[in-house]
Image (tube, rainbow, N blue to C red; front, side, top):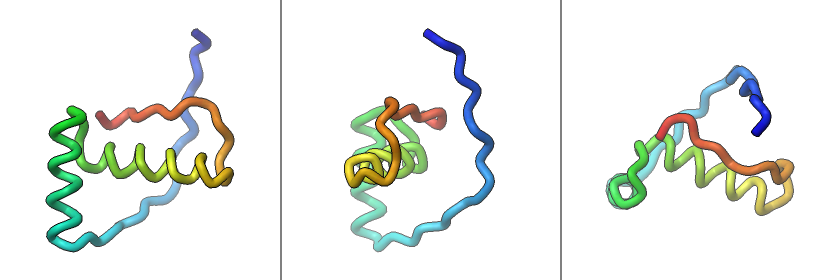
Length: 64
């Protein structure tokens, strides 16, 4: 496997969720053994790739 240096992150996005949404994210994070922020990041990248807004290259989650 090729060592690939991740691109530096330059911006942050702050999302606000309802209590019900946040609890669902927490449950999913526990079920998948990820941190809530890592799960949201993974799901967002997966969705953007599904829409064709990002290239398909394999999704990595460095926060889990």
